[in-house]
Length: 122
Image (cartoon, rainbow, N blue to C red):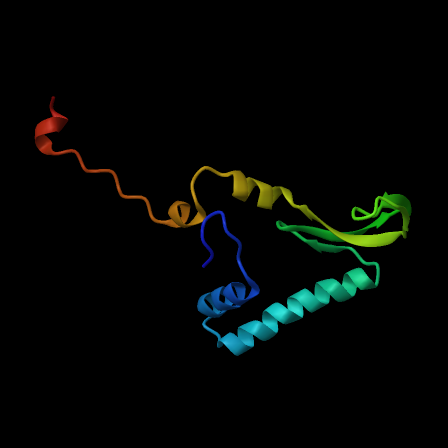
């Protein structure tokens, strides 16, 4: 897994899918690649992708503008372009901002200690 504050690579994601699903790394890589390719293809067709509880992917259109060449300072025309945009869903935001990590919250909580007969009468 990636380090805290670091970043997760595609290889680490494939390894995590393999570990959780108990599939081979090769099968997991095919799954991860297929998901990514499906998202890219849908965006290329101008479609919006909605993954309930996770977020949505869509394209935003950037208008043409005047820019500057940082090396020479000359003005240049920047053409219009489409850029992918991800908007996280409410559930994802809530999960990220929750106090306890997911692993700790899913662990069973210890049962309360039973009162001993001596303390019950006090």
